[in-house]
Length: 150
Image (tube, rainbow, N blue to C red; front, top):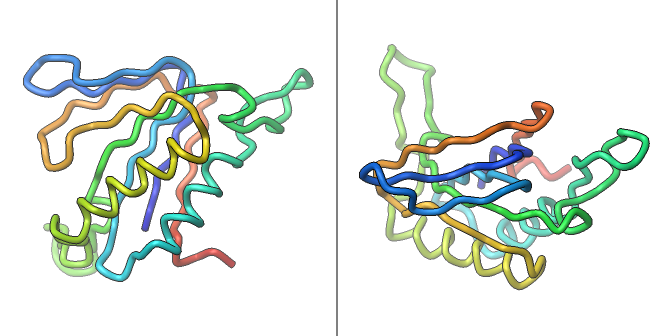
């Protein structure tokens, strides 16, 4: 499981030129899955994200989590996080989980974020052609892979 975490002042998802979801200050999560991902990956990633101290405290040091800030979270599926560019110029997405595997993982991840954080959780629409807009705060952008825990 790979997640690109972006600290945002605001973010939104549009589908067919209509706003599908939006948040104010918080985190935009671009999430990709591979076939080997499981509940342990979801649990670990959820805990890591909601406890990640990437918001500034009074001294402008990153010491606060999204929970501390009572921020919102926007979760967008993005299979392209598993792109392989080793051969040729067209990326291969063979390592990305197929929808039959990815959709239940995506839905469970959203559920866990809600249950563990009690924050406002918004989403994109799995498999849709989405336009994602954001104002990155910092900018702060972090990549986490559940296969690189240690």
